[in-house]
Amino acid sequence: MILAVAGGKGGVGKSTVSLNLGAELDAVVVDADLGMADLPTDRGPDLHDVLAGRADPVEAVREGGPVALLPCGRTLAGARAGDVTALASAVEAVEATYDRVVIDSPAGMAADTGMALLAADAAVLVTSTRKFALADALRTQELARELDAGLAAVALNRTGEKAPTEQVRRSLGTPVVAIPEDDRVRRAQRHGWPVREIGPESVPVERFERLGETVRFATPQS
Image 1 (cartoon, rainbow, N blue to C red):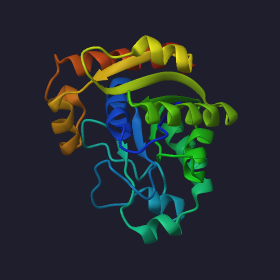
Image 2 (image 1 turned 90 degrees about the horizontal axis):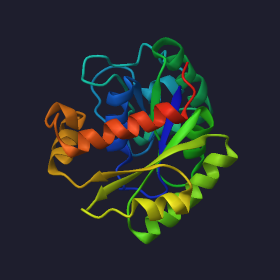
Image 3 (image 1 turned 90 degrees about the vertical axis):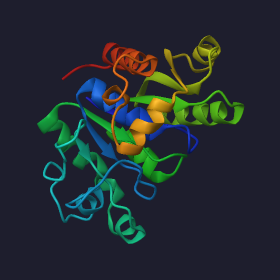
Image 4 (image 1 turned 120 degrees about the vertical axis):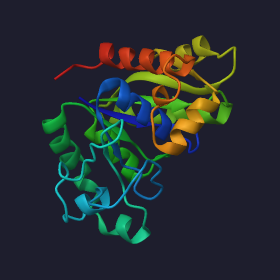
């Protein structure tokens, strides 16, 4: 299974959702935001190297943390040197070894966003309750449909006590899971951890569990 986590607008929390879904699904998270990478990295080959033909995608996967991760480089030169059209074959190689892959996709409607969706079997759309974010989500949903990445679920992120999940479900026609605003999520993300590492009994963990179960139900398993 290859799952793309996408969102029309930057800043809605795609990386946070990707990392936590990776933990729930026991998946490798691929940081495919080539120009604005946001997940942890360290020394060694990364996705820039893979897309430039300098590294094997499976060998670039880091297994030492709470979530297996294929990180992305941080330099503009590295982003320019890679062949974004090689993303699908790289992700498929990781899937062949690890079974499940979550792609943290770039924001917006650029070509690299399309490549992540093209590589995926299904998508999770991350949005917020702001009207402009929902409008962007609808455009991203249409792009996912065009690229045959069916929408498995919507993560309505950073919500208050009364999240409009039913309204969003009617608008997008897909199961919606509300992820509440919570300082533990922010603190965990700063360390590059899923939130269950510091708040295993918290509401956000319960919601990410629910999101993972929704995805499993909606997506064919290998």
